Image 1: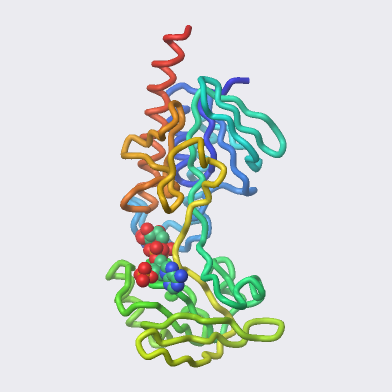
Image 2 (image 1 turned 135 degrees about the vertical axis):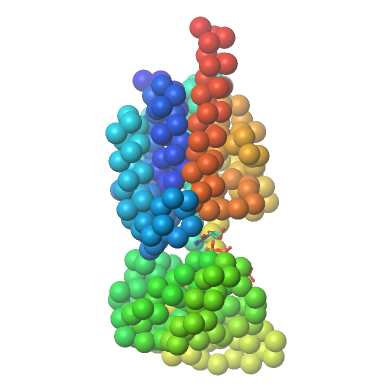
Length: 309
Ligand code: NAP
């Protein structure tokens, strides 16, 4: 079967693209490597900045978005992509289970958690080191934990963790935050969150599980050990676009190069959401990208395939 639109990734961008694709009358299949839809937002607590849906949780949002897409006729398959051939009018995407062919492809594979890259991080992964406060925070009820980072994720996670943990130490390499001011203010108002600024984690220590982190002050070079049972790492995201190298243009950071029209350097291949070059990576911009990418894909199909037919 030749799909009209094949979408890689069932996060907000991919599912939004599927909604616009099916509503334009196209056959749409979404390939998702995880066994659930939603992408990053699935593990988010309350979403406070998506217009019109104050207080909705990331889980609810993911469920509603996926249900909406499926009810409209989008098909979601849970398969891992292993290779691609995207040049020419028939695009081929091979997964571990199947070979899919399509007139257009929308890449919406998101971005993944960046690692800190320090001693003990891999050793204690799942045994004190976590990249998802909403997934793992409950394991640290009444305990002392730290969170590393100074962006929205780190500060929102600090708030979330402080509800149940005895103390949360926020370790950030600078003394200014990237997070929204409203979130920084909320963190400052919590009695059990303390700041360790201008500081970097050097290593994580323990026997079976994490018992402390060694932190260095970047201004005076002094190090000290902070006793914690959990280390939450929220130092940003990075794309995983190795499989698209040589097929579409990537920037030096590995993001797929595209403007607001979501067109990649390869005709018939579009990109939506966090995986593309863009100034603002938010839920609302992921949804917007999905819409734009699907409309551009639809225009491409009309142009190329009506000429052929
Ligand atoms: P981010 O905004 O890129 O922030 C990453 C933080 O980690 C920065 O403070 C950075 O420090 C620090 N960092 C990076 N590499 C580091 C390293 N090797 N060692 C120590 N610290 C390091 O990432 P994010 O917070 O995960 O957010 C990702 C995107 O999602 C952003 O666009 C964000 O706005 C968005 N988001 C939005 C919301 C919301 O709107 N409610 C919630 C969550 C995420 P520097 O500041 O010094 O660079």
